[in-house]
Image (cartoon, rainbow, N blue to C red; front, side, top):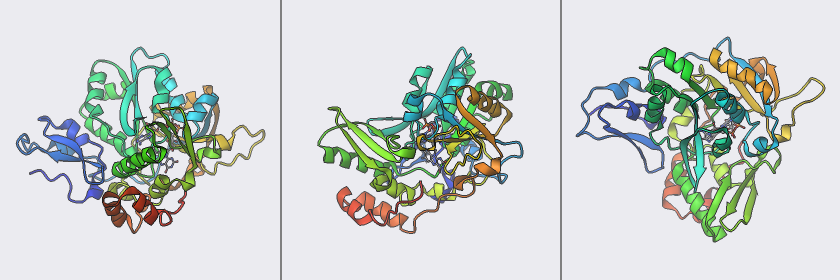
Length: 377
Ligand SMILES: Cc1cc2nc3c(=O)[nH]c(=O)nc-3n(C[C@H](O)[C@H](O)[C@H](O)COP(=O)(O)OP(=O)(O)OC[C@H]3O[C@@H](n4cnc5c(N)ncnc54)[C@H](O)[C@@H]3O)c2cc1C
């Protein structure tokens, strides 16, 4: 048997191993916490070792940002984009710039539908809203790495967005393609990432919400901008009625931000503090201070932090100027926690995850509501 990892901290669930397996002997399957891990079908496995060799979490990485990284603050000019984006709408602006002038282009990102988070692609700028908003749990990649390989081979251009480990997983799985192909046709955009929450806990939270509301829930926003800085959570039922809660009072958010339900690999993140793999990094620009007059940004509506990590990435970043308010800054002004070190796991993480699986959600909620502190969003 091929040993892919012995400690769950050493698997981010990126799925690169499954994507490169020539005999399709690997499948990404959820464990008891809902996080996906590779499972080997021994009968199919030819022991070629490609899966272990491709794993992006092995090997050394350089520390810190590259010397030529550029940093920007950005806020999208269109109010409807700002409203639906978790931060300043940089993702939509970059995706719009990517679509512009390309004949056949696709943009991949995490979508939310009927309580599930999964990666999908859109081929029209009008559909980008399907990928907006931060969903604070692991997104199911649904085998899209193989799909992307085929699209690149057909000459299409692809923008892939996701967590740093997903982006690096895709990059590793495509490392055998000609460099000109990936240089010209592929743009990688990562979100700054605090870690992904447990799909199991999220599912229980979703079922609980449905039971509380006595109605099927149609949609959910993890960062509702009707609260300043998007510190709101809201949901809409099938009959059109709505529920809303202040982010810091929301139980799922509290569990997530206090490190009680993070994937084990997130608390040992191989990307926090290291050289970025993506062409572009986008995050929340908390604490952005505008010193120059006139003040151009509205902090309450969310400001994006953007890093141009590669030459190709920086070209798209410079295009941001056309879609909103934009300011270049020294990278040291854009440093924030997840660029320095991983989010720590809560000391009661193991116990909380066991309780989440075993207890009725109401009981679990009562037990952990106060322990799950308000955190630092
Ligand atoms: C799990 C998670 C943790 C985060 N942690 C931090 C943090 O510590 N510090 C920080 O500054 N910013 C963090 N962010 C990023 C931030 O909240 C915004 O997502 C980011 O700034 C993009 O916002 P936007 O306004 O440009 O666009 P939006 O339209 O809001 O962003 C959409 C983008 O987010 C991606 N995305 C959303 N949910 C997921 C998911 N579950 N998995 C993979 N990709 C997803 C989409 O693919 C798309 O690229 C986190 C986001 C997520 C989802």
